Amino acid sequence: MAGGRRGEVELAIIVALSANVIIAILKLVGAIDSNSSGMFAEAAHSFADSGNQLILLIGVRLALRPADRSHPFGYGKDRYFWTFFAAVMMFTIGATFSLILGVNSLTNPGEVHHSNFNFLILGIAALLESVALWLALRATWSELTQRGFWSAIRQTKDPIKYVVVLEDTAALIGITLAVTGLVLSQVFDVAAFDGVAAILIGLLLGGIALLLGYESRSLLLGEAVDRRTRNGILGVVQTHNAVVDIVDLKTMHLGPEEVLVGLEVELSVDLSSEDASTAVREIETLIQAYMPSATHIFVESVSSP
Image (cartoon, rainbow, N blue to C red; front, side):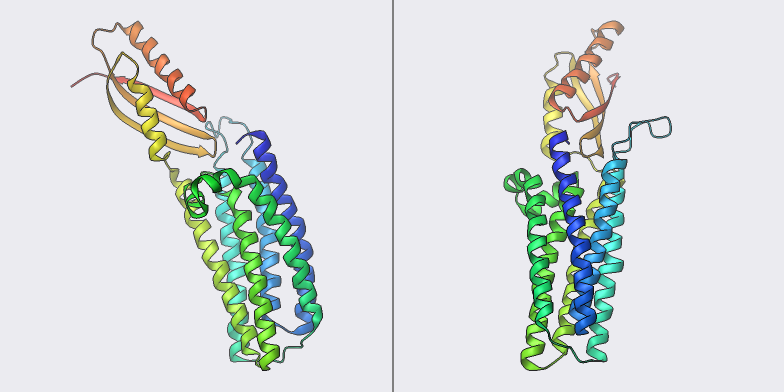
């Protein structure tokens, strides 16, 4: 990732972390004051988000470490591991706790103490989350507009960029659910609405956690470049006049902007060993020029059968 874009992502994470710590404390105070399951669920939501964003910030920094003897291809996959860890945190702390609260509220209903203080807290939370979401969208806007929201998330090789977008979007939806639960329980004097809100918040968090976990798992296992990029590499290699056939092409993302390329090509039998070596180096240069993120390129010349 370019330095400027990486800086925007880090800024979005830092702002989201700062906002969520403040929001979590305010929501917890409101939850204790009102005995609202929805508010407790939202407090758990914000505390989980705070932990996630701290984890993501650590992941961004750790992934920048240079390659060494124990990790010759670098530490780029740290971004994928910590994104997966954040998804687990969101599921276990945010989703599970919210669901337990909601179910408990429905099976053992208690009195919800209605107060305008809760609505003030949720209003402040919505404002802070909106600012954090705007910064996160600014860092990802070009990809979102080119590919569309869901396609960008599914196709991205840098899921950290979208964790904050998803978390802040979920936070605004969660706030809406909490407000709705409080209003309905107050209007109809039925505490169950508050419990239902907590359950819906838990399901929302669980769904996002599963999506992030699935995408991170795919990248951790070693995801190849997309079809268009693969076809582009093949096209570039075929332009070299010494290439008779492309036997095999394997690619793997080592990080968002780090790709390993392994290529087997059949070269013309008329080439001397020195000319074949020169052709291999030229093919590597062609791939590097087409795809600057190809940080590790291995081209092997094989004989025709």
